[in-house]
Length: 367
Image 1 (tube, rainbow, N blue to C red):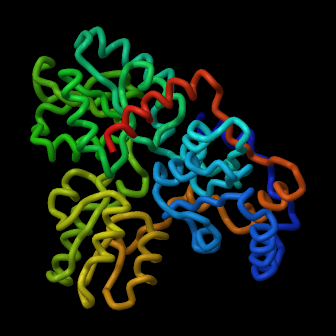
Image 2: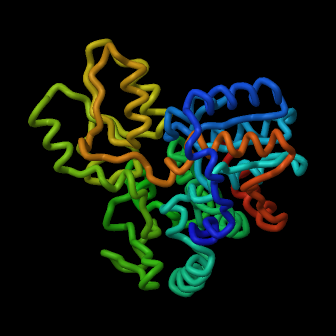
């Protein structure tokens, strides 16, 4: 579902929540959580604002939270503080009688919206014409349920930033080539780490409906969808050079959604969990420039006063769509649940869920 489709289903936040005192809102959230007990589950992605994150029963990355939701059979309502595709995955993996709510339907993902079904089916037809039955599709979990379903339908698999290398290796055991949606940077960085040269990677441009390649067709091993994360694309080579110049001893750690050139000259690169774990294990007194979302960087900084922590890009802003979920929207969603009213429910139809879960299960079998 596109951002425009999502916004069209969004109910407007009532005026009363826009003027409430923060302390009063926080107290009401605590009261509702206590009164509902195990019937309510609040999940918070690492990129959420602190005003929301503080109330999460569990925090984690997108797939980790969806798996937590899938294992929970006691919660009647799951409030997912993240973005739309994450709540979709939770709905796919949970039971029919469990309700998944996204407090603000405007919380989409620009990366996920860079690959829609019409574009993907057109691309697949053209790629089959060019390469025959030699390609297996993979999609980052940061994609819509429709794209996950397409991948599941074509014997493909979902991947996370943590297990991408393992899943790409698996994919090459199935077919000669891979199509990697929708983030070109994670696909490129992963394939390169596995020894595939950049010259054997092509880019599929879904807007121009064309393949951009630097080698003969028969030499192409990886077809990268021309998509990206709007946050991680803003970390640049110049950012790294500036850090090296001002503090040569500072460690640079980045997410693999960053440009290949940035990842290549950083000291460390890995998933959100990898970044958190690496800094948790780091010695006191060490210094870290982190190339990922600003809310997470600030939280890491707060949790590690014994270390120097800063953003690799000093002008970085938090993820705009993640920040749609705020305390007023969270309280509104919870008060509606308390009153038996469901607002901004996320549902994935049966057919889409069936195909999408095939792609997810293929991945889960290997992690």
